[in-house]
Amino acid sequence: MSLSSAQAVRHAVLTATNSASRALQTRHFSWSLPRGKQRVVVLGSGWGGYNVLRGIDKKRWDVTVLSPNTYFNFTPLLASTAVGTLEFRCAVEPVRRYAPQVTYYQAWCDNIDFAKKELKCMPATRPVNAEPTMDADLHPLHERQNSFTLKYDKLIIAVGAYSQTFNVPGVKEHAHFLKDVKDARRIRSRILECFEQANQPFVSDIERRNLLNFCIVGGGPTGVEFSSELYDLLHSDIFKHYPNLARLTKITLYDVAPNILGSFDKSLRKYTEKTLSREGISILTSHHVDRVENGKMIVREQGEVPFGLLVWSTGLAPNPLVKELSRVQKDPKTSSLITNDHLNIIMEDGKPNTDVWAIGDAAKIEDAPLPATAQVANQKAKYLVRKINKLAKDQESPEPFKFENFGSLAYIGNWKAIYDRPTNGAEEGFMQKETGRIAWLLWRSAYFTMTLSIRNKILVPTYWFLNWIFGRDLTRF
Ligand SMILES: Cc1cc2nc3c(=O)[nH]c(=O)nc-3n(C[C@H](O)[C@H](O)[C@H](O)COP(=O)(O)OP(=O)(O)OC[C@H]3O[C@@H](n4cnc5c(N)ncnc54)[C@H](O)[C@@H]3O)c2cc1C
Image (cartoon, rainbow, N blue to C red; front, side, top):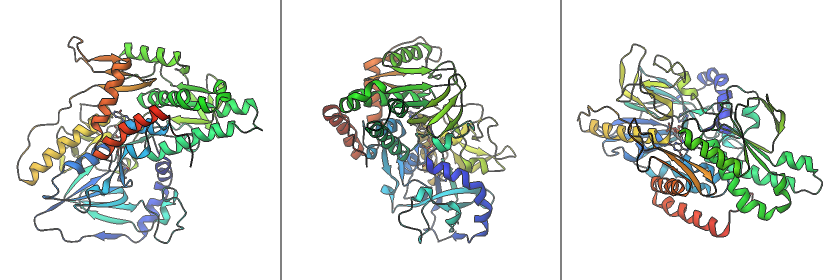
């Protein structure tokens, strides 16, 4: 899980522009609502926000969604799109599918006034008079003058988290993150560019080796899955078309911890390490990246390591909006919003705010931490939909949120995966730990089943099949 370039740019300028933007003209949105309908504002269109949007009773609530992305990212398939196993559109769903029943603004929420029930928002689009050729994501925020405020009756905070860089210098500037479909597109383009650059006749063998050194930092599920998908791309397609470059190509997975996949059972970790190593992916655990520069990183145990592509995936950092919020309780370690088991945020006086809920990676239930996964965000969203739909009918829903662990899956390349479902003290039984092809079938069926729209339910297996028959598309545009 990681910080996209857009997020990196935003993060860097947010603090500097906060005071400037306050001075700029702020518009207030206060049109009248249909009689009896209260406004629910959903912040974010990820696993939490989008699933609330799908399920919420739009006839009884006036729903507004605010997100810088006009789409939902199906994150488990991003690594596959980054190497061309799937096309990018298979991993997104449009937010506007629900318009006009739902109002949508492509914008960031920069702050929340809980007392006034008001959101301070900043468009995520370029100013209307901006150069049409300029990338909206990279447009300086301080030039997006038209900040606006939005009132809410009920608020759902589902803004997720950013990528953790542990303040390693140069990561934001020189590494790729894998958090968003735009990141996946940049990675795919860079992989193909590395091969075309290395194939130029004037390039030396040393330069070729450097360009074809693919480094992944972070041995969690995202780092492992990306390394494995990259392995598949190289071995199934690229080496066929660039046979002279195969011997110069290397994939290395780094982690500062002594093991990769720390959240999985030990036997599955060992299986994965053995499988990846046998396939030629070097795993360098207990390695520390001290600095990243253009085309090289400085590793404490190795010295200078040149690379063509560096993918950085070392966990989560708090979303700047969550960081900015005051008068609410936050987890001292992760800075996530603390909620009660009904998912209401807790204010500084220790009382739950019954009009505001927080779900997904941005929130944590008090004294009951759960992993930052799509599974948790999805279940919290579904719980909240039931609750809020009952609320619209003036019905109570006294049951607290309960997480049901369906287990974790990770793809480890070459049509193999691992599956781990904690036993909670019970004896191990059927389908609790699986490896290899069976786990791979589970992996594919799980993500096919979870795919949301009928369109993507058709596209995903179609691309799996097409790429199996004809190979991945190696064009770069
Ligand atoms: C590559 C990858 C693979 C993954 N694979 C799996 C997997 O296989 N299984 C699993 O369970 N989990 C997986 N995860 C984790 C899972 O994606 C996250 O836990 C999940 O996305 C969290 O959902 P969320 O709604 O909290 O945040 P997100 O899905 O990150 O959504 C946050 C939303 O908020 C928006 N936003 C951000 N800031 C603001 C703001 N200031 N104002 C308004 N909107 C804002 C963002 O644009 C985005 O739309 C994966 C993650 C990644 C990156």
